[in-house]
Image 1 (cartoon, rainbow, N blue to C red):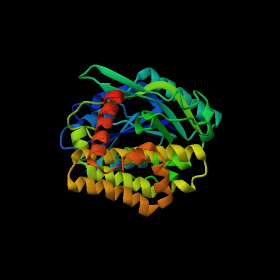
Image 2: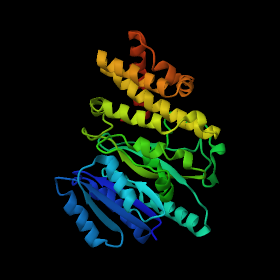
Image 3: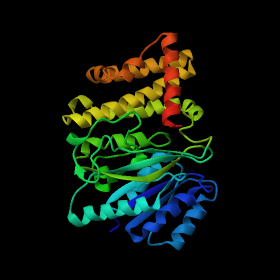
Image 4: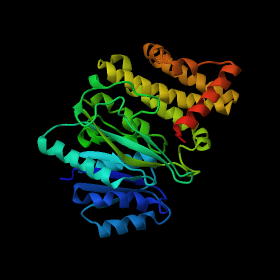
Length: 338
């Protein structure tokens, strides 16, 4: 049995997918690389099948009609045979020595019978055109190189959200919690990380710079203009997250605190872009999003408002909105997130 299954969702990825696949191949037989060709119209299918032909014990290709990033992840999970599951986007890649460290640790879990639900590692924002890198690590909030539970989790800074880039889940946990990402929708990586969290009991943080997250393509989903153009999908994802769990019923204090912080971040992202768009329609959508949360669970709404960001995002005057946009640009410059 494979230790790790890695799904690579691909849609018209001919120009860059080789880097993602090549970065994983050194893992050898411990890994299963599932290339999901999501209805590409370029030579993605042919490139993927060449890899499968050359590395039949490691690479599997699944061709499907276009269903979007979420459905490609769903397909990868359905076909995964590894004990652990990871998603690597086709324009990203992983660092070789960190890959070896992670596989060594996963093998230790398997051989010892220790059931780790989630392994977390660092990721790196790679802005190749500007020749800049920014490492996101979790040293200040997570115990390093040992198993731990939510009670030992510390305070996450604004830059330290656990993202798809930083997480490896136990495959059976994802299946047992019923994870199913929506089709034809962007930003589903937030659901992928968020929805399974209450099923996670034991975590492990390995302090290695594993995932290289490429920032720079104009058509990239995290590009600011692209995000504003797809704001309705961002709102959709946020509402799905609101619906997925009643945070007021989660008893583990640190888990509840982290999930509340993550949800506030999602509400903030949607709110900031709607404010930046600055049309009557966009401002109405911002108000409707917060009212959606309030109607869904007023207690949870009040809890969101205890966070400074949650309170600030509901300010309505023009000067207050200008301050919010100014704060966003400062944060963008500091954290370099798009």
